[in-house]
Image 1 (cartoon, rainbow, N blue to C red):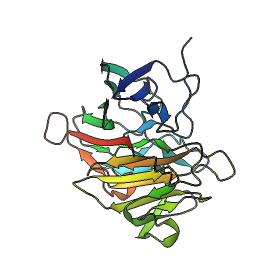
Image 2 (image 1 turned 180 degrees about the vertical axis):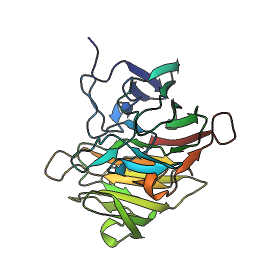
Image 3 (image 1 turned 30 degrees about the vertical axis):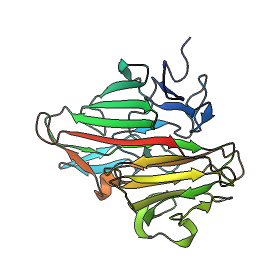
Length: 301
């Protein structure tokens, strides 16, 4: 019998434990001293709501699954049929292969073959590394094709502090909010309005969010988002490097169980394959610029 998410790869360091899955190279769980830092999924379950998945070679949505690149009109499969979009890339359900595993780290690889709608071959690589400072995730893409390839990356962890997000305080240092239409696709940007302003710690309450943010404030190249229980001071933080210029924040619906808050690092916003906003063009194989490596991480507060 095979688990729905395939083989399970456990790593541990300095009181931290994490499990990464064969399916999608997803982060299934992460804890520190047996306290959960992410809202993941069980060994006998599939990832739901994108939990822990890697979003490559694009994060978020592409309108109608259509875009043009290099003089070609391309059509992707509609993996979000309700809204008619291509969602979250091509790698999150694939079977990744372990490249190397140690007690504290695991790296996995996937050769993403050229296919309908994305006619380029990429080597994808992810390294999960645990230490006393928490988890560091490094995602890398290398173009193996003789032509330039469009690319962006993201991830979909759900941060967790206790059993409910309602009384937690969120701090999100962003200055720009993405305006969207009824299909959750960008139509513009604006300064972050009061309703979505978490630049200072603010209780989440019954807020229902599925919002994109940009113009991230940084310290030494990093942006850090925190989720803290003000009653105990205990919390969790997610940081992103300078390549991640956008964050998507998503709450489960208010009427259901809400143990986790999705904070999604993104190198480009939704529909970047059409807008070109922060879209990376990987150079042809074997030339300068044929590879992009980005990092983000999670640690306890």
